[in-house]
Length: 324
Image (cartoon, rainbow, N blue to C red; front, side, top):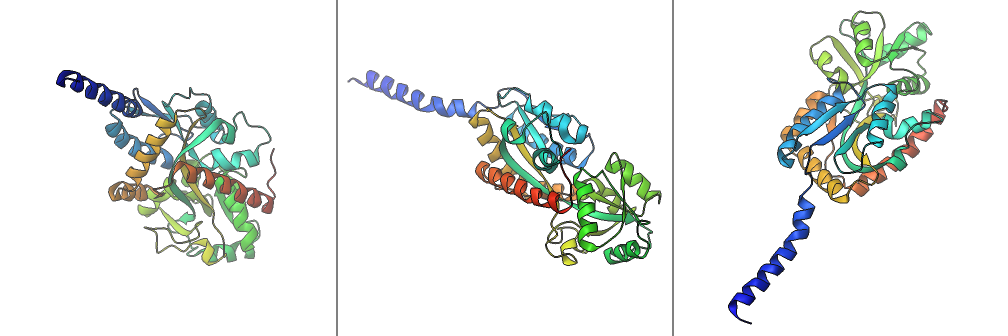
């Protein structure tokens, strides 16, 4: 074999060896969409936009946030589930969309286990019990004592009995012996306005949606719903300190329509986890409220979702919430 033929042979081998890698790295080759079940300006939306801005730079493609709020996460979940499984659509999902909705509704127009595949875990989102800043209720013990002294008079806002905050409120009543009157609101924003207007005594809400108001001194956090104290809120006790084992923390995870190419799933998992491991990004997410949780593989995300379904099935039985 002469030198020219040898060089051509090497070139052919090199191209053949490079092609699979090039094809694997071709994703994304068009804009990527993240569907959310929450409105613009909400905690999940703020986290998603923070990540999307950085992912767009790394992927050299626009990453668009598509807000589809309403219907207790059903609207957004359905849009994502029906999207083409071509790697261009992901669903930035919450606990409600992937785990609790199937336990609360007899029929859903989507099936979290059949319609989606796991991609990446993003963050845990602690909830809290809050009061208006000038409230005479200084501690969670004060709230419980007041509710017992005047059964049914102390009002505790939430987003409804079949929502995450509503179930936290019911579990709190059940385990603490509190006798708060649970008041439903259409959104955290509406409830927060009533709380600041002193129309209700307290509220259960996610920190991601209420952190700004608390830091502005308009609301006061009495306790968080997490097993341990929340980073950045170390001065606030966790409910588990009073009620051992109490652990009601929401979370965000990215999933994709079933059938999405593995190359897109693997790349998205790697790049999202890499962003979450960046201290600057994690710190910015913490200022919004959630706590970044980097490093979970696709398989670990799948195992976590399965374990959450089992755990929440037990909780709904404890508080007597049956599917409707």
